[in-house]
Image (cartoon, rainbow, N blue to C red; front, top):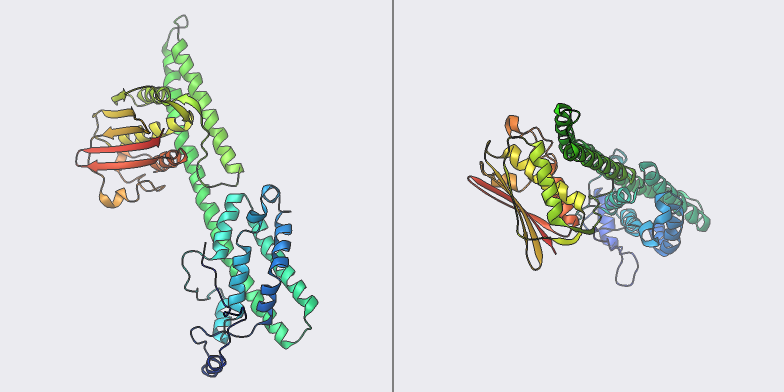
Amino acid sequence: MPDQLDCHDAQGGPSIPGEIDAASDKLGYPFLGATMNSDLADFIHAEMRAILAEWETYASTLLPAGARMSSTALRDHAQEILEAIQTDLRTPQTREEEINKSHGLAVRADTVGRTAAETHALLRVADGFTLEQLVAEYRALRASVLRLWAESHPTGRDVVTEVGRFNEAIDQALAESVVFFNRETERWRYVFLGVLAHELRGPLEAVLLTSELVKRLAADTPASEATERLIRNGRRMSALLDDLLEFNRSALGLGIPVHRQACDLAVAVQEEVDLRRASLPGVVIDLSITAPCPGAWDASRMKQVVGNLVSNAARHGTAGASIGVLLETKDTEVRLAVQNTGPAIAPEMQKVIFQPLRRGGTSGPKSGGMGLGLFIAREIVRGHGGRIVLASNEGNTVFTAVLPR
């Protein structure tokens, strides 16, 4: 959360050093730390509770997201946005600065991280708001403040000037929110499409290979195992589509959902390795499981982790070399390691390798991926409260998922 800007003196009133203001007016630009009187800023400060109440009431009508949110979530960063507007109103502004602000060229204040308006936009994306609803919040805020202000203050030149400055500040906050809202939704739109394409590839390959096997078998030859594999992978494809469509319907929320159920992780790893052996003909996968691993796991998601790590090893490892998969159960944690031989991953690449779209297309004809496998694996492991550790030196690369029991 951005630092809140304090523009009051120890007694709670605005700081107005007259000498600095006079010098500022004379030279045509504000001195560092200079402030000015602002009845509207004082009004916003005094009526903060009423303004926030109207913000909350209106935000709750923005359906469907607003109906299920708490009071705190509905008011998200509204007070910080208003406090930033108060600071803006109390800051002297030259004619040039006014014109630049109207052209979207305002000089950004020296703040740490994102502004309150930018953070508000990111959280509204996660809550499932639309861009139209985000803009409507600012429209309602503007109308609320100006209506309350008009009810208690007579019109005049000073009032018109302050209203103009207030509108500038609102527009600035709105512009910051819209930019970050669009950037965040666009980022997750690409992630969604990438996940869809990436995750359908493995099951689809297994389905096609099994279908070819069934076709080659004689009509009177039992093919129950191959048929079962076909059905199992078809169901997995359906589950993946359901998950991804749910992900899209929830306004591209952050992260990959994990749903834990009681199961044996060892069984899930064995099933996924068997599937990868069928979908990666010619690749030797050595599996070692030290012991059963019962617990609360999302078996489908953990299969994705295994599949993505194995596919990554097959794609970037030495051709013809075996891939090692180890599931090791300890007292407090579980370690799932996938090892392959091949060139070491460069240190600069190791820093960004789990970011989406980083590795795909960078390793020559063997690549063929979109660079999302490691990103997906990391997010699923994080959803289980764990982490992925990478160790790579010349001739050997190991990705290890460390999961709490």
